[in-house]
Length: 173
Image 1 (cartoon, helix red, strand yellow):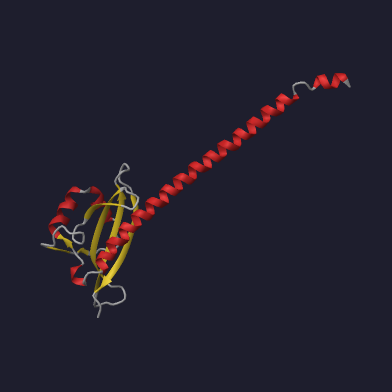
Image 2 (tube, helix red, strand yellow; image 1 turned 30 degrees about the vertical axis):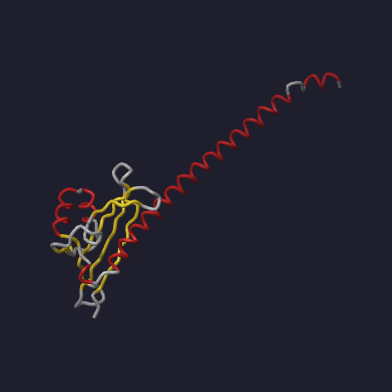
């Protein structure tokens, strides 16, 4: 019996090492989960903030008379020739309608095709607005103005799209 106790002299050390390895693996797994949760939380916060900017832009147009839903033609021409993202986004819009623009609209938020705005998360976003005149699919004699708002994250390389919202306005009967 005395020999058996001496044969198990390092057993406690082995148990301790196994326990340390198991706790280390568990802590690493928790750290990875926290990292994933942080990334997901940041992404959803950014989407929420960008979505609010897009909604505000669409609400601006909803508050205007139908005839005033348009962009400034001089600014629109300038943006199309200098902003590659704007041109690419416009080319990917559905339908083949024409731009809705007018001269002398100015540089107000309702007339500007591209704006830089600060979101509720205090980050800077590029807000692109497109207004196209399309045939109304339910009424053959009327057209509607389709407003698309694309919000891009200017702080990331390539200014990736964060959110795109679209709505249509009809002049009514």
